Image (cartoon, rainbow, N blue to C red; front, side, top):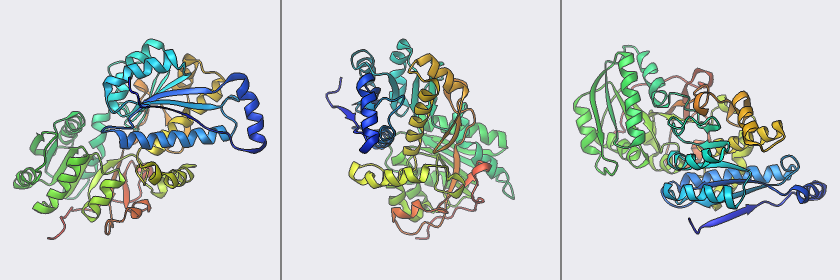
Length: 418
């Protein structure tokens, strides 16, 4: 068990509201929400951003008087980005800390590691950005906060090939390349199926080791096949490496991008700057007018005021809105069933459409979103490396889904002249 423990207790807002609430709190005690979270290690960037979002929600809900007249208390432990710590953390949360509700940490592996303990205890379980974590377990009290839908590996490339197929003349060839690790393998596997469905010939289909440093040789091999399209399934370091190599080698194609993790974070946006122009990639939220859901702007303003001091992503448009929406769903469900009973909460979550700061959410098979909403965006008009520009509309134009579309695909992709 980690020794990096922390317990957050949030004070109430002042005035009459606090006096009224404290009376109720004294009678019933706080509602304890427990979770492990990556605050150190490789997942810490996302984990810290999620924690700040939860803290903002808890402060707000306590200022409103709590839930069912009871204060909210977050009880959390650092899982160190190490799945081996997770089962012990959840056993402690449930058996010793006696938390009322458990939620997952950030990302797939910690979530999957917690599942056996959570299922044994019969707890309702909201997860955050856990790719297909319930496919094996099929736990009926599991609910996922990432808009992948029930067919995630195909969804990450569906729109890419659907839009490519509509270009005139229709592209004939595609190069597929990805990291030889879980996400890269799944993303390219889905792209392979979608390319076949679209009738586009695969002329390059290879993976590279996760610790690859030299992407120039990979891009030169791809360039030699002269593909119309280039689809990439990559993690943050290789997303940056591939884009730099594409410009250095001078690879031209009609579309370049795909399932590239890392481009959603401020650090890589800032590093790559104009090299992102016309890259087409998946995302989950973009500051476009079509996604101006009620409450998201005030949340982002509050998050950004505290992000630098907290040492987290200063833009906060990838994980934080979904973490906050997760807690909105939890709060709404407890208020609706007027209980912390796990069975009642799970039944309500399965049956209800929730209005959140990331839009309406209805859960479907295996607790995934009933309707997938993975975005395909295209970077436009990026000038210099100022991160502030990524807060503006028009820099990450939404191409798909149609309901959130804010612009049309621009082709071809051309490398920066050197």
